Image (tube, rainbow, N blue to C red; front, side, top):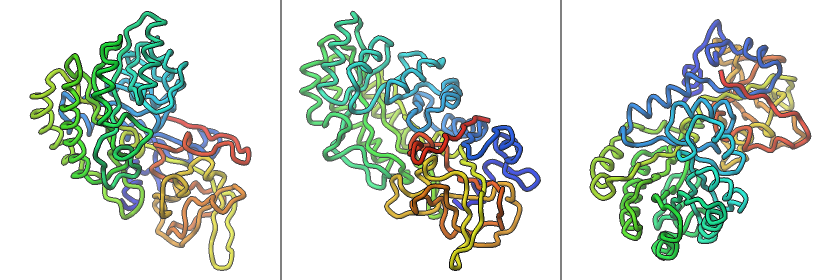
Length: 408
């Protein structure tokens, strides 16, 4: 996607980007300081509506909170979605503070502590076990509390997904239980005092190729159908994962949601209904839900020319938005979409490099990017900042204060 497409997604007013319908300079005054993260409620709602319209009605939508655990964002999505997935005790508490019922919260991730497992059992949260050790700890907590816990088995599939930003299934993984080990685990524990509802298979993230996602979903349904034979009860929970990607750089093409949805309709109407009629299919999304609703806004502190390169030095940086600096999963650094948020109606005028305020050359937000002429106090906007932004960044580095976050 081109930068102007990201601007159009938010709208403009009198030459300024609008976020939540508000001109950027006014929003900055409302927040009270820069830098800050802002999440646009209308952009977020459009994405949810698109998913609801495209996907089968039987498919439940789950928010992977790790993408953006800001409480206001989570609260808003709790009113729009069916489920929330958490990956820590703190995320669990944030989810329990929403209107989502505890039984609609799932707890995934390797290395759950015994204390977190006990909390989850006590709360009535669905625990996705990722090892036999975790299963034993769930059973021990359940025995101590006198509660029958709800459990799903996270499976490390025997296939890999090509084209994912991060591969999280296939081969040796810290995630899930190897598919070939699942029958033995179910034989040992499925009748030991837990209510085993089904399975979760998540093979990879940040995938922009619909055909690849569709293929992974078909393989997942086949795999779970074979594993279901080892459950003492019918499959009631079928988490197909997510992996839906969003475009970050100019060469990226948006995911064809229609093609993904068409495949899901075929799976739900066909093998899922035929082989697992009681199953609730779940699509678990993080980045795809919230990534494009967010912007990171930072103010120009200085403008300087060094040996032919024009630098815009801003009051933010990689300590808040590590991903945009290229130090969070990029093999080759590429610029995120960027704009001068209070000059979006101006023509492109110069190539500049936008750097942060940290004492490291890694603090690079945009390199040799064409922008309108910008000066001190102008507002630089980094798009695609709604997922894996603040909480995925080294906020303590050099002791700068944490930026505010607002949902507007």
